[in-house]
Amino acid sequence: MGNRNGGGYVPGATGTPVRDALFDRVPPHDDDAEMAVLGGMLMSKDAIGEVSQMIEVTDFYQPKHQTIYEAIINLFSASQPVDAVLVANELLKHGDLDKVGGADYLHSLVAAVPTAANATYYAEIVHQRAILRNVIAAGTKIAQLGYSAEGSQAEDVVNLAQAEVYEMSVGKVRQDYSAIYPVVRDTLDQIDKLQQGLVNKGVPTGFHDIDDVTQGLQPGQMVVVAGRPAMGKSTLGIDFARAAALHHNLTTIVFSLEMSKVELAQRIISAETDIPLGALRRADEITPERWNTLNSFWTKLESAPLFIDDSPNMSLMEIRAKCRRLKQTNDLKLVVIDYLQLMTSGKQVESRQQEVSEFSRALKLLAKELEVPVVALSQLNRGPEMRNDKKPQLSDLRESGSIEQDADVVFLVHRPDFYDKEDRPGEADIIMAKHRNGPTETFHLAFLGAMSKFQDMPQDYSNQGV
Image (cartoon, rainbow, N blue to C red; front, side, top):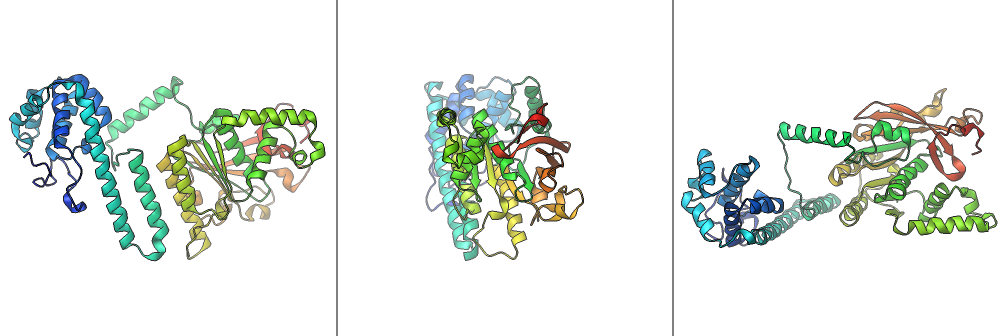
């Protein structure tokens, strides 16, 4: 059974090795290191605790070593003592003892290791070899995709290739299913931590009532902010980004397909300093006092984790690639895209509606893959203008296709004074038309157009000028 190239093993109950069919040559592995890791674990409980944090069962190349490792971990997890005899009994119970070479093989593992102190060193060797096998497997898969794809699928293949490499680089082990018991246990643990204040509630929006209902924007959610042109959807999206990055130090990226970096920066400056947006565009209105305010704001921004990208004709593939990179380098926490209908796929599609639906689905998958909320701004069609009260509805999402289906939360921005200056001037309704994980609600915010921001409704708002 000690064949170093693994040629004598076939997939079965004892583990699923990577067979040579995937590789042109013998895949990277180190049988001696695998044996030394297991020998150390059989000698020391401390070694088991440390090694189990470093490697997965699939990191072992030899199926029999996978089986032995699993038996050790099972005993350790059940708070049972671990040694060669007890592991042999555990394997015997499951009918696997003969498959791994019998009790003699377990004793030979212990005899081959002088001390358990080096177990973590050997575990690192095993893990590195496993990474190399994954690199080869991913490369082979990507090559196969390239050969089998049609010319029109090139971008899809690039995206799949990026996803493969990203998953490998963050060290995630793909598992398609979980038993319900541990999932419920983890959920109850999460609730317990939430009650004790040990868990962050999500990415704060900066608005008290919205955060109260949503518990913040949740990782993996696709959040749609929609409105008619000039209604303030971009302003609300930037408000979310400001709250996360500038007030809670959470890495945020804004993809602005409509406004330039300078326009976006002007809005952020105005919202943060309360210097009217119009004043920033007129040199004579920047007084020495305002210069002081601007300079002190600028110094505060030195380490602010807010990124802005205004690249023209931004494709979905670029957005995904940039988000993955920021997740790896800066621990990305929030993505804002302004706005959905301006994105391009760069390929021919049957209809614009189908293309926007594809964007929507892809952004939802990106949110789940990176475990961050993705806020996508979206246009509404002319539906609200046909109604007497001008209020938007979920069905007004323009070229909606699957937007309303994919979104976890949909905010519709409505300002009555846009249609009638006397109707609740300076107020806005943020209608939560969809909330997958809770109740829907309408939030009343103050709209300070001159400062390009929304804010919680102050008690004395009626006395303030906008």
